[in-house]
Amino acid sequence: DQQVKQNSPSLSVQEGRISILNCDYTNSMFDYFLWYKKYPAEGPTFLISISSIKDKNEDGRFTVFLNKSAKHLSLHIVPSQPGDSAVYFCAASYMDSNYQLIWGAGTKLIIKP
Amino acid sequence: GAGVSQSPRYKVAKRGQDVALRCDPISGHVSLFWYQQALGQGPEFLTYFQNEAQLDKSGLPSDRFFAERPEGSVSTLKIQRTQQEDSAVYLCASSLGAGAGALGDYNEQFFGPGTRLTVL
Image (tube, rainbow over all chains, first blue to last red; front, side, top):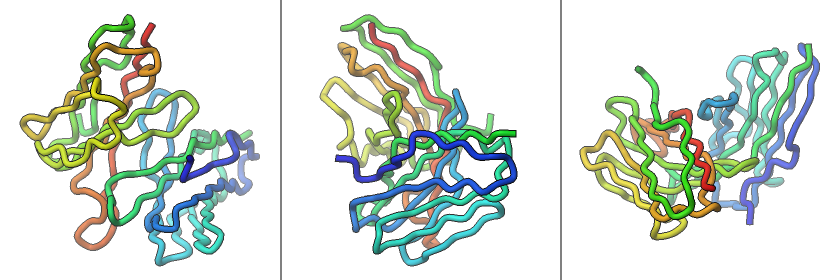
């Protein structure tokens, strides 16, 4: 029973274009959502997060959108750069256990030059 | 070093063997987490420490798994009588606090590179 789903195992985007990574969740009790980025042979690194009281959070080239009614969030990267090629994980947590992250399976993003 | 370190980076064990995986968190970080990541999946929570206290071990898959952090810094994850299904990458993370920070912002978890365990 996957509570956080990333349905696209991989995504290929041209350099300079927008990359959109999607994530769906089933548990309406989740109140904090995060995106992590992972390069091969390294641990995940935190990228951006959003609280359930917001619908958008922006940090430079990265923007996360949250649609609570659809239980969907997305990460937009614009413009995409070659260094963005990595696996992106969506994760969620809830206040009762706000340290325990529930992760999606990840989406491998490939930026083509 | 400034980051979370884990050792060994790779471990091959024969089925039935005991293994011990080490995590050195960032100095001063109160919280420490262990995750298991199977191939093609996201990390799954195993256990959480606040200083030396193991506050949550609900994710440990069986009583063959044991974690400790006796002095509130270095942690060891021990797996007894390893099975093939234990093959995975074991990730350790640390953070200043846990969950929401004092201002309601998130206490970022910093991850180590992981230990890849292969059980033959």
